[in-house]
Length: 254
Ligand SMILES: Nc1ncnc2c1ncn2[C@@H]1O[C@H](COP(=O)(O)OP(=O)(O)OP(=O)(O)O)[C@@H](O)[C@H]1O
Ligand SMILES: [Mg+2]
Image 1 (tube, rainbow, N blue to C red):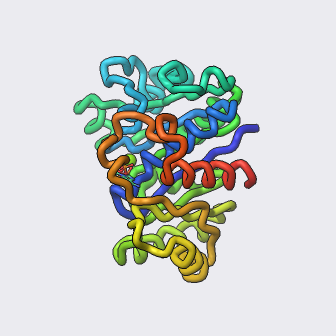
Image 2 (image 1 turned 135 degrees about the horizontal axis):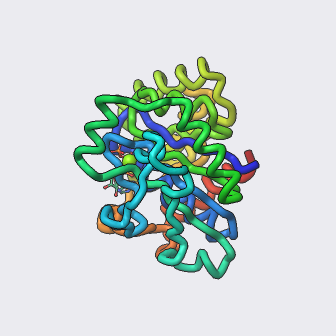
Image 3 (image 1 turned 45 degrees about the horizontal axis):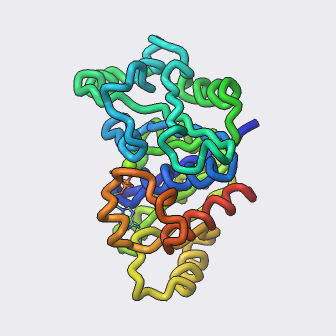
């Protein structure tokens, strides 16, 4: 049975979406079958990294949650656009959230049958024979997040070296503990080159009592990339990409 990996942060803009896209691509480049679900219903975005246009979304996660389609009708094979993935025998499927304004407001206002989300994720793993299913989340403590945390096989909490993130991460880890989340990992992102990476990692592990899966560089190259594509696949030797490799292997080992 494939593993569900949830990537979450208390605050926004920590790099969840880029982490999910790059780590999923890294695993697929090693021949794995990977799915990505955008549960950030309020502000979806991971489709952008895969060059997947909103007009191409025929069925979205929203349609599935409204009972309008099967979960695999909302799964799009985006492998072709990913350099070196097909050759490696890997696959990436994307389950986007709707970018239609009316559909976003409707689901926020009316909600949905929450148990359907978890049922859908399990069905997706089985139907697509996935090795890993990544969940990109909305920041903070929302209902979908609590739900996905509760069924995750591994959870990454991502933070920046920032006091607000430090406090928020405490709250997130408390929630994870209460939900009995297993295989909890931290990722520190947007770390300036001038920082002592080894010391930062040791400090975070001591303060939070949790393994740090990787420390990722704040990189102008990534800023320039601006979520246009999967950075890792184009810059395999970059320090950021080596961080992604480390995170992927830690996940594979859980
Ligand atoms: N290591 C990094 N170096 C430089 N820029 C980065 C890095 N990681 C992410 N970014 C940039 O930070 C911005 C936010 O990243 P991303 O969208 O992945 O965060 P997020 O946590 O998913 O945000 P949200 O909470 O809004 O969903 C993007 O412009 C992205 O390119
Ligand atoms: Mg995001």
